[in-house]
Image 1 (tube, rainbow, N blue to C red):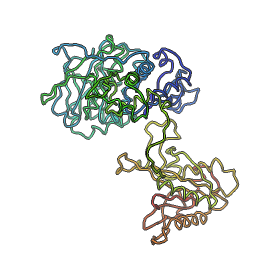
Image 2: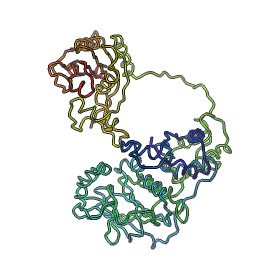
Image 3: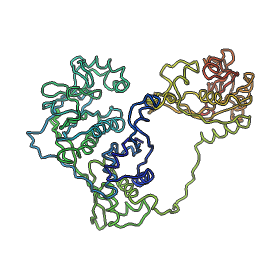
Image 4: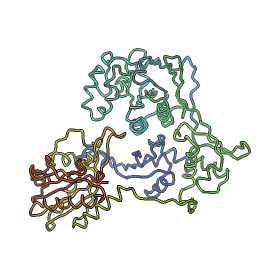
Length: 592
């Protein structure tokens, strides 16, 4: 779920009153969002840059981190949250968004060239006139773009947003796709011109932009937007041009969204203009742009029309389990920005709902049901017994994991629970392993150096636990059953979870025979008596173990784990443990 950071004082000013933290948490709960964290700007900077208090700049403004639903794109900025809460509390009605009545001949035009079909075929545009920015609204405007890019835009692969100072440009505009060697411009925050292919190399060292390069870098043509003077507006989805950069003095904003998905492009454009048209000279009015495609299709965007839905009253209150009539349902929907009225169709009472352009999440009658339930209050819904009986059950892997835990505990080991995230150094260097960048899932923007990667082994967590408890009497026998995560191109998310058992033994002697005996016991109890499965130990070459004191655990002809005596370079130098240790790690899923 996305989390939106907003200044508390600015939010309360937009809401028209102040709240205690407890009261605001109640309001968020009633509306269906959650106050996830309360921090300060200085604390955020300190975490992001790993700084000490005295070395950190920034003020002590209180920041509220609010968790919102993933499909509520209108709540990804302070303006949207404040407006939604004001309407929910009855302080204002849902705004009516309008398109300015500009003549067709005066309308800005965007000409789309045929070559764009090779890479990003769609573009939609709009203009916000007479915008008044201050530092806070400007930052919110930029932050909303970033949130949309990470959310519905799928890290710019589906949609990329460009915003420009219209005063610095001259229409009509053209959306083209050219060879990278034919594109040259000064990119945002730079002072010299780059060719597009040179720009790709330049941004490979940029922590923020390098993750978007793969979208177009292997294409024979790159998308580019020009004005009538051949000034580059943007090289989507990578970077805007410096010439048209918006500032606090910008009054007229030209917004363009290039995309591979036209539906999502329209949602993104509508979200941008509906959230920030409230700062326009004519509030909630947007100037359209005419987009002309090479096949003769002409599109005037944005489309801020209201979608009409008719839903029978019984289909709304039935799934919730409450008794309400239409006079009670209509005000509840109005609180959720869904203007409604009662109508009679085919002899039954229905609710005619007007879905505004901000509510792209309303796709079906069930979405309406959810909003009525939120407005009514989940805590106000009476508890009833279900009319049908179902039998729930635990996942087989979880049941099996508990049986493994019980078996290891009976052997005298104590279970521990460690973080699934860790540092790169602990996951690789301290284990004497090399990082080929093909195994571990890397956290894109870690809040602390201790949580940089998702663990690929249970060993670092167990060794850290032992390090902090090394004064305990020997032997120390601990274990953990938990997931590790490794990169896997065959999975749709690019990574796979794997349930493992990790066992660590530490004493005056290595205890290799203890670990070996435990491994043999586990393999014995999980074997099915009527099925012959070969189990054996084979030589292995893991860098964290002594070369001649380690083995691979083979089960049914495949390797399911490793065991061995940990090398002093790992235990002593890496984790400051002076006593010898032995470690066993087994893939539990392979035993099911």
